[in-house]
Image (tube, rainbow, N blue to C red; front, side):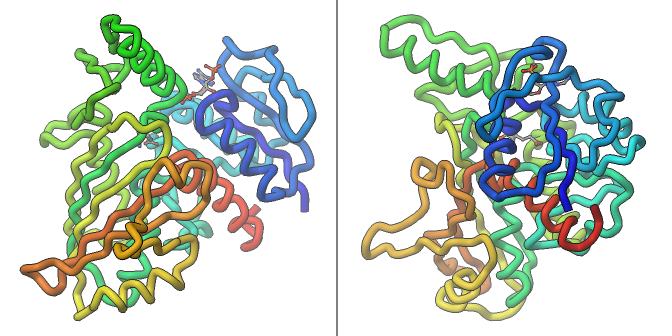
Length: 343
Ligand code: A2P
Ligand code: 11C
């Protein structure tokens, strides 16, 4: 079966990776459309050796579309995802807009593929930092149970889009040239103050919520519980932006329900789908964002048993935030739906 696919936000950081993943994974495409803002409409875009013209994303652009992959920001999804669904497309939305809606499945196929069959036209792709964490924790949870998760993240600027990558590059050049470093976007474009990311780390991703956690932190907390079907799970997050272009890293402390050892966790992760265990301190082997850029899996290393709680374990989880964290997971959702006759 071949499908008509639309990418909404085709010129963006994630949209560009969606194009690459569709080709790399040989997704069965009958026809493809590239949608973006009116600013890009009429411009040319390359796909699989051919040139296409970008169209403005409007409700009618979704006529005849089977699968619409959205990554153009929450307000675009809010407005156009229901329009696309109304016209018969299945929407796979990479923004946070519909994620916590009770009728919208929030899916990492390795964790909760079964939720896809409940869809009503829109499926949400989780936040990048959530996806890589739950992909690594699910196999551990299946074997040993899971009661608590405390995560601190080290997130790449590409999570904030093409303009944030450009900002890091410009600030690095400004510093190199001995000029004043200008900050315009990070930590959050809509917030009052901006801080340089070059030569810095910023303990704020997205704006603050009323409880003192940021939206990014609340996404990790709420989305983890929803994807894993564990409303009772204790989760806390501190999300930090670092001057890395691609690849989110996470220091994760977990507590399991049943007795476990580091070796048993190694065994579980070695056999888990989409996970690469990279953990050999004798050869200083552990995952780092520079080396996972462009790679599909979620990498896990530095696994240690806590020194005061034998049910506590520390892990270091790294993945390319634009791939498993965004574009790849979206395409894997589409593939799973095709296989399960949901498309
Ligand atoms: P455009 O290039 O026309 O602005 P990123 O997350 O990397 O910043 O990319 C955002 C993506 O969302 C881009 O493809 C951008 O297109 C697209 N986009 C932004 N605003 C709109 C809009 N109002 N309608 C459709 N697409 C939009
Ligand atoms: C970041 N995780 O790294 C964010 C980007 O909810 O899809 C993804 C925001 C989202 O800035």
